[in-house]
Image (cartoon, helix red, strand yellow):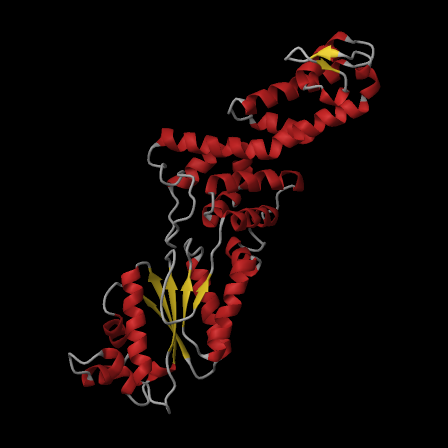
Length: 365
């Protein structure tokens, strides 16, 4: 995607749910309200997301500082005291006193002026600890003092707490839309955009980062889809807490046979979605163009012994028989095209994938 919009910018700059989340976060920053940022399916391009929040925080206030903390699973108060407070403040703390109360009661400390993004909260226990600390802190902040604003980034299915919850629940439909945008942005020929997007979508099944990695190499994905999917899965690392509907390709990458099987299944599904309709469109178009010549041979029996009287009820097998038998109304090239379509359809119907040459031929029909 050189010279074009990056996948992460598509995700955070064009997708409706992520744009809505960023707008809600902007509102919290402007109103100086703490909130839980809930990502039930994980956070894609986590560093880009943090960068977006950092930029919005800078625009929201010239007096506040933006800080990031990675949740360690330890006591949130101790983490804040260690990472965000000066040595002078730490020296004043008396062990045993609730740290939230201690910080809240302190006057004119820089901690009060923070926009704080807490990243990597992936357990209910950690979230409850943060909520308890924030509640204790806010209860003791003096009325004449500002209060730190907390944004708690959580990769959990659901949460309960005293803070408002801003939910960004992206699913398979969002991933599919993203793949179409990313495939178009990759600079592929328009005829292949939908097919490449479907290949990436079926392989990633909700993991937009993995889909983007595939679409970053469109030529390889088109020419050698199974090998490209497996190769991408072998080196893929995702740190955003993803737990959506996975195809299992990433998990199976250590076992080549299993990975190839799952990748082949993904390619087959993509070909069924994209190529089956094109084969049917060709059948309908061929019948429309040769309706009179085909009607001359009707009625004929179908596979169940019933009579076919309408040309548009003719399947590829029937068409092969008629075209092969009638050398006057139909050219040899007609028979070759129908023969190919029947073979391609049978291949897909038997859970097998078409070769890249066969795909190209179907797309040209």
